[in-house]
Length: 324
Image 1 (cartoon, rainbow, N blue to C red):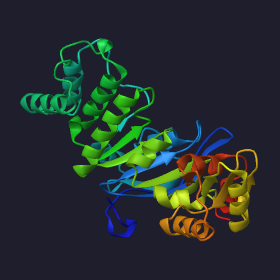
Image 2: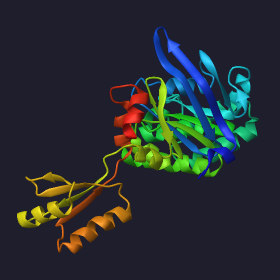
Image 3: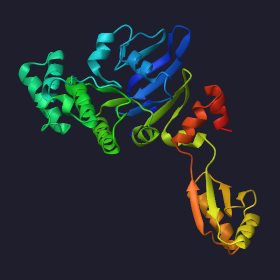
């Protein structure tokens, strides 16, 4: 997993990328720097501009302003170079449901101008890798959603791209199919492929991404590793519940500043969730001869980050509020 953007070759970079539709600004000068061989996740509410960013970086539509390079090629000046280096899997399956999986794969090999023998070897290998051999000669219309998604990505890989854009690849999939897709993505990255992932599933970004950016109102509201983003948001705490009112009252006196809940006889103590902080709380209770009947630790997750950064107010306001 990459440890520093500065020492990694850059697969995708953008400076001041802008796009508007009429009077609606979708991308308002975003900057990106994605190391090669990593997973980058772009999060944002519906309509935030995630798909627009993918379409611009994959040369499917032009930007209104700014510059970007993909695989070392300028997206405006050398779009053919970009297209030769990338693969794109959109939100909606691009497979033809009226023909078989094998025919879809061979059609893609023909589009990449692979010689007949090489095309058949490549497609056969990918069908095996994606566990589609048994279904290969069946019409795609008979495939499950997960199988169609696997075929979609297999078709994307026919041209051996080094950078893959996956636009919400697991939307609509059941949990088992989602986890299968996650494993496929990990295998791609292990092979040195760079993955640009857009998703609305925060656990997906948490599970897969080396770095995450939150897009809101056309701007990058925050960017970092999952752990860095989680530390931006306050709200971590230890919750202690007591059975006996006397123990609860004594604990409240001992842990001054804790938030009290008289009805449930519980205390909430602000904490970053570190082992040291938890030990300090428990040591204070031990010194007072007290023991909580229930203890739970809550640390902010990506849901908290997402809601903090994409609620009302400007992205800059939200980021500043999150770090107070």
